[in-house]
Length: 161
Image 1 (tube, rainbow, N blue to C red):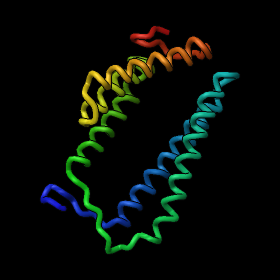
Image 2 (cartoon, rainbow, N blue to C red; image 1 turned 180 degrees about the vertical axis):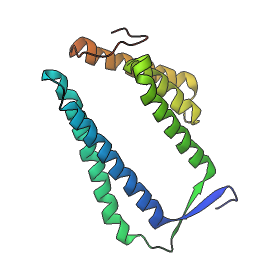
Image 3 (spheres, rainbow, N blue to C red; image 1 turned 60 degrees about the vertical axis):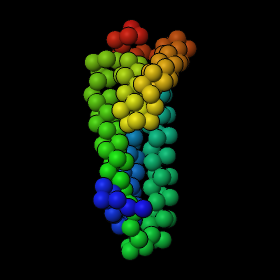
């Protein structure tokens, strides 16, 4: 049921916008992979592997959308609620803030802050649950990258170097 707070959009436009997002993500991951190829030795493995997998996943997403696009009738409407659009905007702002703060806070601290703030601000989880999960993941990533793999990482505000 639609309310006056809902926005009606032609479904083919939604699929086209999602396709543009998928191709944009593939381009970003391809760029990151190219940047990672300039690193030397073992330091190049992780950025190339992760970015390569991200690019493949984004291209698979785009391929699925390309198959779906002809089936979407131009007359069909999709209803988007303003609440869901606010959550999307919140997530977009938080993602940009996450990327901008990595050089200042460090990777692990930025993950801790982002993964605490995102679910709480989007109304998906209570803040204490988000903080607990984020702390667990941050410590796990720190153990993997710093302790196990001994990867060189930028200085981190909470986790050190």
